Image (tube, rainbow, N blue to C red; front, side, top):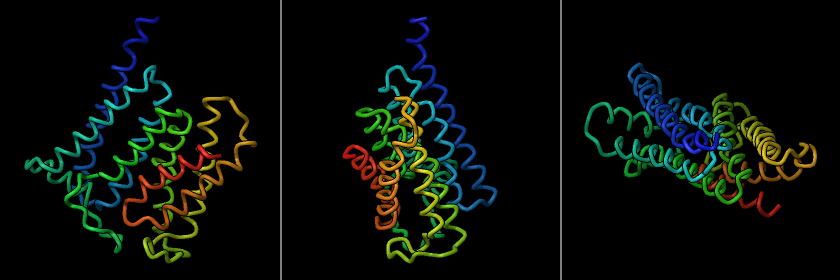
Length: 234
């Protein structure tokens, strides 16, 4: 049994990297069929959430950096490799037409801000696994949920950095993040949910505020950092 456990992390990493390859393929195929790049970009985090759900399975959490490095390698190829396939991936993972405040970051790697946010969540996971696990789930599930609700354009809040954000999007982000953080703590410690709700709601509200005021896609890593610090202080 111990011998099998010693191979579980490498096997898991190989499976995750195969999943990344499928994400790349689907991104390019969807782009070729006319799916907006912004929709492809915001559909990617929930798919990466499958990997996040496997974080507690790692026997040695340092193995998750191999998968993260593989994701970074993909973005480097998309940024610098001249093959048409990688050019299309770069456009699919970089172009934005739905956000008038979006700053041109073509000099950065595609998915740079998401990669940086995953790095921040992974850093918290190394230090305090239950925090990093919950934060990564918020990044991959709560953030996209808020984005898609913002697309309804009902009750826009008019924040200078993100005028497209809506009240419904922020409420859903707070509720989803609080529940995901509670669940992460419950997974690691078996703690009842009710005593955790106050702390996780406060953390989610901090994250929602950072999401509103941070410019462009920088709100992704900034939110992960701010929520992690808030959880640690609480």
